[in-house]
Length: 161
Ligand code: HEM
Image (cartoon, rainbow, N blue to C red; front, top):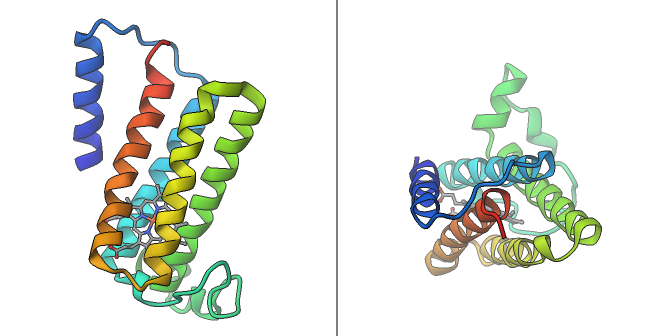
């Protein structure tokens, strides 16, 4: 809800400032979807306290995907209830996001430079949060920086240069 309210406010502000909204490109919508999903899974990680387990990166205690990923039944409930699966998905989505943004930077140039740098910083903050076993200050910085990432991505997608 916080991210939705922030987006509505930003859109209203940009409209008041008279900044033209350009047509949203599919590539921008895909980037927003990847960031949005990563953020939603960040909330699952925090909510399930899944940052307190598997405090290694990139492997999760020696495995790319922990054995217990399908521990619960029915299987789909693992994607919202199983801390190991949820943490794994948050990592995967984050890596997909940073890879996609980097490809956009390489293919489409400077427009995607700032957003890619912000996402790289966010990945660094996320890995630090995990390796340090979620110290409050670092976790809060990671949470707050997600808002910066989201706002820059929205601006990239919505506001005409
Ligand atoms: C595009 C990259 C990323 C985004 C947008 C992102 C976003 C978020 C958000 C919004 C939260 C907080 C949710 C909340 O408190 O409600 C969160 C939590 C978390 N993220 Fe990320 N994240 C990213 C990458 C990563 C990576 C690469 C890792 C580690 C490998 C990571 C580890 C964590 C952990 C451990 C938490 C839980 C912190 C806590 O319990 O307070 N994140 N993430």
